[in-house]
View 1 (cartoon, helix red, strand yellow):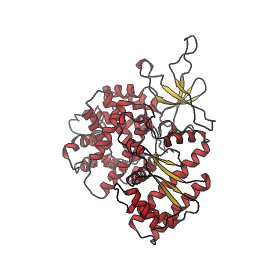
View 2 (view 1 turned 120 degrees about the vertical axis):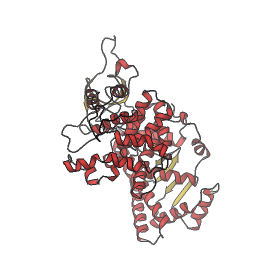
View 3 (view 1 turned 90 degrees about the vertical axis):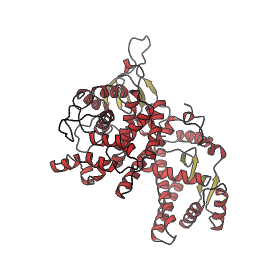
View 4 (view 1 turned 180 degrees about the vertical axis):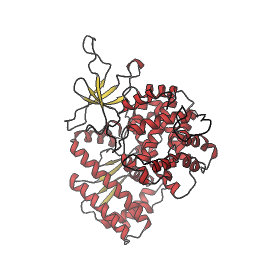
Length: 497
């Protein structure tokens, strides 16, 4: 894969970003996230209420503050669409799951009106921001949308905000075949869209609406495509744990890990996508469990644990309401069976035992691995990925299907992607790719981390199979692993766009 399909602006953004210090990048990231979040909120508000409404005024004041903070720090404040990215002051910033929804929304709304860039000039006020948003959202996404927007802004006397048209080159990029796009960029987009989808699913359930699966099917099909091109990026994203959105992120992580196993098993592509949908909805029954139990900071008491175990039945109940019963069959089995062990312990119990379906056995392994490697405040000894794999190996034939366990461990390697490792050279590193040679599962490709450096630029990539001059010994070897909570290493730059 190359980055030839990036626009000139995106290339310039990368160059500019490399010249920034780590502190400057983090400040821009924080201010950019605030600006886009408040722009998203204010846009939603002014579409519903008059400008004089108190809620609209509060939203616009917050947006005005965010614009001014960015301008004060950077002497400029702009948002630019490049491909499907939103650049803040012509710089790409890492976006986490919590903020991806607003970013994606702003990108789509700008593209619909053919707006390539919005610049907020010195002296912009809340009234300017409100009138601009009113004008933007009053325009229908038609061929003349950009010209219509200019007329609306002129009529509303918006002087401190200017826009430029989305170039034809950038508009054409959306039609480029996925295989010619950068895998990292595509992985980020699909991952965070799926996290956002799980938030929509929760709202659908709370509002008692019928659960639609068309978007979930489309996203899982895209995940299968990415996994079959280059699995390292999507798997890497599963290691960036977002504890504030654990329920959503956990479901997406399990989906990706299940798809990885299905692909390694050489299942039919359509079956892998169906496995992905079932994995995505495996914990949907937890929407019936009180948040005080789900978010408990310690082990559950017996009564709470009994209620928690019922999420498997609640999942079947909710999935039975899907608009397509045919699509619901496998997800219902997985929701019911993913906590049943292959020796028929676990839950729920069934007289005579269970005939566990393949999808259920795959999701059980993926579910355990992601849950074990997530941080819990009451864990005295955090579980590193290699320890989680060791547990799966030890419990093969007891909790986990032996064949599924073997495939999963081979796919993940002894040191899974995203694992923070200590090397015999004294260096710290992040595993970014598995070695394709099965003899070297213990010698992945890593990215060396300089904990004292101000810049992430030109970090060294090291293949741990590389030997010293003469070929008698390996240049580097893993001597230990670290849990994310043990060492201050930011893994986002390794896997986020």
